[in-house]
Image (cartoon, rainbow, N blue to C red):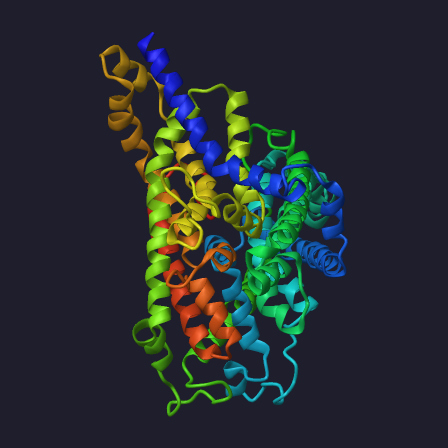
Length: 558
């Protein structure tokens, strides 16, 4: 009886934590949008969405997100097939590098491409290929946003398609090949029809990511007044403050609805597809004499979408100002000294980002172990329901979560007071956003712990807390560390949430980078961007080395 009552208390505590971190912000946002005065008013809600600026931003959002998703499938799909189903040389390094854009902040990606193709491009200027001064940057506007959506979201397509391709048994492909079918015919008539649900799901996820992306349209669209819904919300809130909350809550709900429609499409596409084949060695095509040629094309593509923009960013960070050619005489580290040592706002931003991301990662890494231990003992229906609620703040765009946090914490709360315009609101928002990133690796690890260990300890008289501390926590610790690192990398140079929640003295790296670029200090912004890329790459390498101790499936590139 005592054990049952103790478990019920633990389950209630877990339900409360999930409700506070995942459900309450979304409910508060919805109520503020449709019932701002305490009474339902769908007419006013519709009027706010029918304004010309809102309609134009909605069209821009749908247009860029759709075509960006199509292009992401065209980019990530062939790479997923090549790495999963062929004997392509260097498959693992290619897969690892393709995932880098997903871990690098969108504003950093946008900044690197801006500095690659602009008339002040330091890298192109070194080889005499820079456009003439005064030439518009080709990356600004609709086409540039679509291209970078494809680059940023191709890893999502790669991860999703790889899950489906790895389940196609070798016997199926070998039977078709034995009948005389050529590889391309087998790919077109067997492989692609089987993974069609995964292709639809990958496109839907890429679309959702485009709907909520702020960093890319902020740097590529706002300078030419090409606004999407996230940038329109940011512009309204920055210009008019909390007084426009009714308008931006309506826009935020619209963004959330578009995103949830994409997530629903993804879930429907994958329903029943995951276990079509339950056994067999994964299919594999032999490339023969084309191996080296296709490997060269793969590395060429990685060089264009990843290495060249990074080199452009690095070159820009090493010159004293825009337009100065890079040479041994002009080479300087003054931009790094300025942002890392001398400039108070950037030094503070580095410290804040480390503290905020580190605090969220530490809290979640420790907290998800008992949460997962309780969830493991619940029924499958409860697990699916609660997992869906936990995924909600991560599924909706970040701008939606930021507005929800403003609404939730604007007024004083019992015991803690008002969190608005404090550092705490950013840490709480990070914890809400990345809760699922920390939970999933630990859930995988706890699910593989034998129940016999827990039952034997219980028979020996060990209480639930002692079993958690001596059995579950040590075995789940590596996965918790991996989840914490994923949270830290995601939060370290995050922009969207921070851009709407930061206050004086609480600037983060994403906010400062965006501000420097807007102020025309692009060389200093480039130095910050290069520094954040270095941090992310180092952490990814640490995770990769750590990956051999983790359950299968925690790291998508292994």
